[in-house]
Amino acid sequence: MVSKESRQKVRVKKHMRIRNRFSGTAERPRLAVFRSNNHMYAQIIDDTVGHTLVAASTTEKAIKEELGKTNNVDAAAYLGTVIGKRAVEKGISKVVFDRGGFIYQGKIAALAEAAREAGLEF
Image (cartoon, rainbow, N blue to C red; front, top):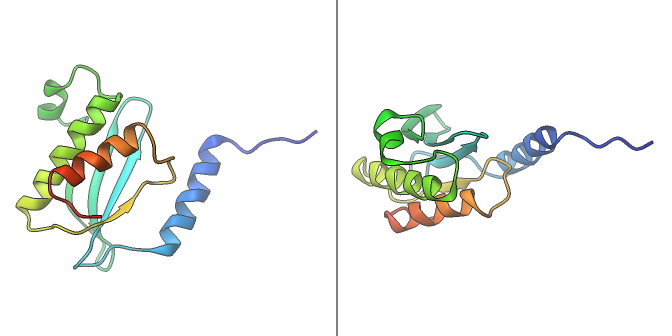
């Protein structure tokens, strides 16, 4: 009988393959996205020194108050605009998008499109 790997293990493997291809630099940091069942997290990271430059998530009180639900496409789009605005305020305009092994559709795509509209280039 053939047993399948869990979806979590498959996602982590995909993420490691993605991370081997690129990393964030000071000129072009990495926009990393993580999605759980209840929340979404986005952070902009400079991998050369290992610092998080900008972060936003649906667990933050100000963002959570703005949203009805924290795990739908609308919440992802709002989080994308928030992370984009915070990055532009810090002087970050170009990033590398790290989808975290998740498929680029739905929430991940909504977050990416909203971040692009807020001023990030990737």
